[in-house]
Every structure is written in structure tokens, then in C-alpha cells.
Image (tube, rainbow, N blue to C red; front, top):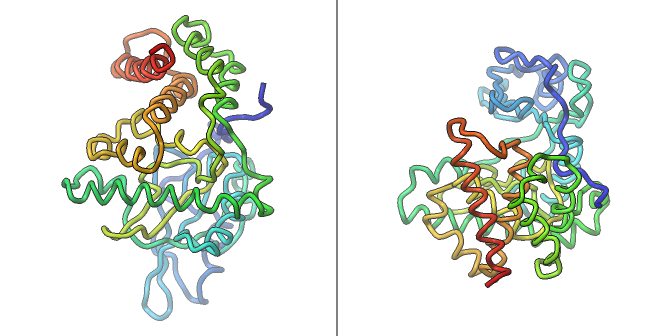
Length: 326
């Protein structure tokens, strides 16, 4: 079995975060250190109140009358801020449009159990994920192109990252690693016949699934890619950066149903990039096996929404398994 943990996170269940006053004393000091004396913090808010800790958006007024936005980075991912802090300068050197590291990383004495915090710059543009939900056909075509450009840009720096000092900090997670990890979890899903048979099938076919591992940010959510409506202007969130199979990260578009992007032809863009239908369907199936365990989807039960979600994921698993029997 692989000696890895897939996406380990800090236990923050006992930590109180003040939504009305999110910045700690140290975080205020870190932000202030990035600006001229007499600058004032105007606003600070968590970017996702339902998923804490998360980045804090901070707006600062400067003595010259201008305002600037920065982000205080806190992360659920174990060591995520440290990893991101080491990657950002390196990625910037390679010409990727990533935030600048402005301060940190340091341990916050108010939150000593969630790793380091840092301050990073904002990058221009708006996120592709939100844009997609109201976009028309022409805009969706641009969106698919930009997603592929973003992921390709990450993949292309793989040789540089592999030769850097950061490489040793990044997980290398093959498809076989992910599958073997599922066997170690003790999940009730391992006792479900269809699930266990599918897992065995993919493990037995692991050699057929191989692609060289590529560098990614570990989360190809379109909300992590920014644009001005024409060009890619930003790549954010490297707390879960890793080397992984080049197709597996796209599975989330089907699992979490990014409907406009799928309907606009993301799958065809993957084929145009050189990946096959076999690649796409098998990765979607493997990641569905992982999500059934990771999100504690019940093996049985009819709570609102759970049954439909479970059956959609199992449908993806079945479609992947069918490729080996046809």
C-alpha cells in the first residue's frame, strides 16, 4: 500500500473564527507590513464562510488615496500555505500569472494548530467558474479554451518544478496510489459488492491507465482560473499542489456537474489535447470511487439529494468499468 495520505486536512472543528472580525493581531501586522506607514485596513472578510479556514480578502487604503486588495492565506490543507509560498516565486519566474508572496509564511499564535499564514497579492480578472453560469455560447467557447490553457500552463512547468527544491514537498500521486489508498480507509463502501468489484477492476488494469505525472495546483476548479474575458489573467490556490495524472483533475467537472462548461464541449477539448475517451471515462470513474468515500456518501439511504448524487457517481463508475469488458 502507498505510504501517502490523500488531501490531508487540519482538524479545525474546535477552532472559533470570528466572521465579523476575521483578522487576528498577527494577520493585521502582516498586512500592514506590506504597505506604507499610515495605510489603513478598510475591510476584511472570509471569501467562503462555509469553508473555514479560508483566505481573507483585505482592502487597504494607502496614504496616496488609492486602495489595494490583498489576501491573507489560511488553509485547511496540511502545510498548504508553506507549499504555496515556496511555489509562487518559482511559478512567477516561469511567466505564470500567479499572486506575489508579500509576507510570511509564519505561524499565527492565535491559530497555532492550522499551520502558517501568509499575505499574497490579488491578481486581476474574474473567476471563470462564476462567469460560466451566465455565459452565452461564444463566451463558453472562450471559457473552455481558457481552462485548457490554464491546465496546459501548469503541466508545462513540470520539468522545472521537478528540478526545484520544492519538488520534495509535493505529493506524487499516481492513479494506482489513489486506488490503493482507498483500500486502507475502512470505508463501508469496501463492503459494497459493486464498489469493491470496480475497485479491483481498476487496480488490475492499472498498467493500462498510466500517463506520466504532471504538475498541477491540485484543484482544477474553474474558480481558480481568472480572466479578463479574453485571456487568462490569473492562476490561484496552490495549497494542494502535486504531481498527478494529467486527466484526473478534470473529473470534478462531471462529479460536481459544471453543466455549462460540460455542455460547451470540455470533453472535446480534452480529446483535441490528445487524451482519449478511455482516459476521460476511466479517470472520472476512479475519482468517483474516491469521492464516494471522501465525502462520506452513504452506501444506502434516501436523504434528499444523496441518493441522486450516489447514483450519478456509481453511473460514472459503471461507465468506466464497461470499457474493460467491451
